[in-house]
Image 1 (spheres, rainbow, N blue to C red):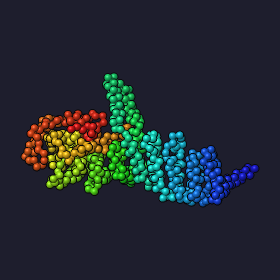
Image 2: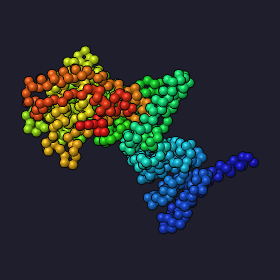
Image 3: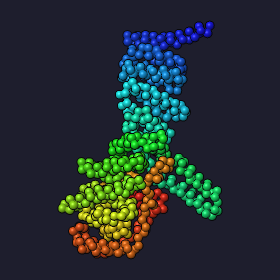
Image 4: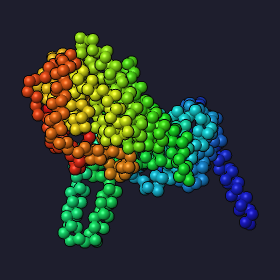
Length: 603
């Protein structure tokens, strides 16, 4: 009796698809003859949400039996199968669906793109589904996609196209953003060849989110923990209570790990954590040993997207730190990135905006990255100063040697980059055995006194700090030039009638402080804060003496090197400490902002 039931069951399993296949085949033949009534009934049954897994499996196996008859005039039928909620069903139904897609694409290549699109849509987090259901749908879609692309490898180009299509709008919730980024990064594990395309999609997406993040709001949010920490610290001093100290430490750790109140910042913070973890994963073997080949692949992908997307985008504050992080993995990456930037600066066929942006990236990177060795810093300064001096030499005989940003924008950007790097690296440079001779070889005096008058055009807060440091160490004395520049009225040709700030460079420093809480921990040990390099206050006597000595030398040189003569009464040079307060750049500043933001500049 039992054997008889097994035979009947086996016969039913075999005959089910055959019967369904015969029904579908007959419907397709009648449709070809002009009668689509049965065809429409089949489509409506497939579209019905109440169809159970057993019935679905029979229909799918039936379709496989007559897959060769499913032609271009059957888009409605194929579309109905692609709308099925197959990923949440029993395992047998999922297997049947995967085999159906395999046979469909093998027989009719025109359905490859719609099938890939249907699978890629499951990378998105659906809020009406549970976390477990979303995760299950992604894993099954990945398995099915891998099975499909093994058959048709050319379908890889469809994956990139459809990832761009399903990429969530930047205003969607943080959980949707996180799952999309995480699932796309997991896709790279299945298809390493897609790394470059996927990294480009994700960086472009995160860049749009980054542009929505308000730095002013983040500054306000970051001030809150500092204020509470100060209050707790005062209580500890008054009560000397060890328990309260432990509680304060735990509170600070919890605040650092807590999600940010700013919603766009929270989205970006979570996604940046996934991106950095992706870099770490591909840069190391499972044993923890550094993996140069894997890290190189990530570095090349990030450099490609940097040139294509990031370099030409002004206003991002955090996404560019991905390349900052990968460069810390190996010295060759640091040198490769700097070579890329300098080649952009030197490219006379490139646009002025691109060359200025490359100079800004180069200066901010060299100034802020702790892992850049001093030998690389001096090499960069050598290249920049040599280029600037050659430019000055070419302009000496030109009648258009006036501080015109439009005509000499790249020159002023490179000079500002030199000043910026020097401000951040001056202690290390002066600490070298040949530090003084190296700084003399840069010919700062020649640069700051040239006819183009770069100190007039460079951002005033950078100029003031540079003047204070160089005066303290008697490298070059700029205070009289700075004082004179305050009284200079630029010629009309140098001023844009629609923009009274046209004579000054933009305040773009790509690697200014990273303000996201959770992902910020990855960069703490790699990053130089302003408070770490803030110079000591010089004595007023040395500043005054240096200024007098410099003015004396200028009198002996004559007016040839400076087209606009000094005034008779030179203004007294302010002390370094007073300049820091005026610039809001004290080491105690909660944000430790570098020189260069418009709101801190003054004239």
